[in-house]
Length: 305
Image 1: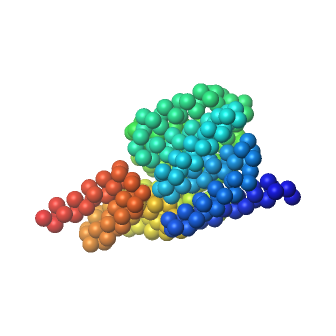
Image 2: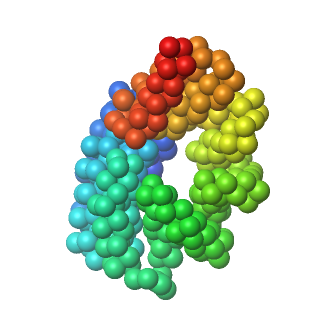
Image 3: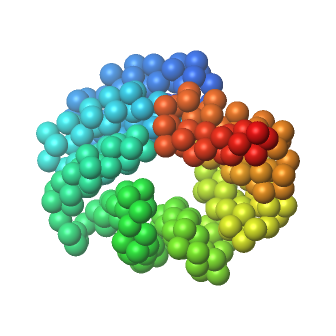
């Protein structure tokens, strides 16, 4: 095997390791190792672009937004220079998703519109990228409260992934459909998609998908005023998010555990979970998540006078 092949294998291993770690110091070590390995690849090597986009995406899921932006921007520049429409559009889409989680919805929308212009509305190739843009578009619409548009975007992605027989894509899209149906109080449909995502996630060992499905299955129980049934779903989701080092997921799970503790009038337990949620949200600068948790803390204080 040539030197480039060896470097690509090493890069993929670093990416696998990066997915597994949660400690900031270990993340930094792996990022440094990734950058050193990247220098062994030619500037125009497509694997360089793929690596930059993969690492950029992993880092924003772990709350490392500044580093994520740096890698995604580098991937975008290389994809644009190489005139690779699919990778160019994906880079714009991932940047849009990064901006979304930071609350920059307008900038996110601009990048999504640009990504569609680069890729084309109905591309004959790069349909996997087109499906991914639908997912990101759905998430952005969800953040803006435009739930019917969000559901439509997720369903478009689900259909595309099903046609492509892309199991990981189906897991992602069914998870998102479960989320939006939950938010629309369409619990039967939500449960159907979430159970599909959970079952497929278990088959392929996708802990991220499993955590997301469990989180939303817990949310259904909470919204149905069944806090005792919701609790184990949230605990299991939080454990998986912790193992993956996904700060936002941990914050959401802890926040929701706080909410159900309030429903059960277990106010000391609620304060414990809310405090953990705030710590995780603060560490990743997740202001919208922190505000929801703080409102829960205020409820406890008011209730106790």
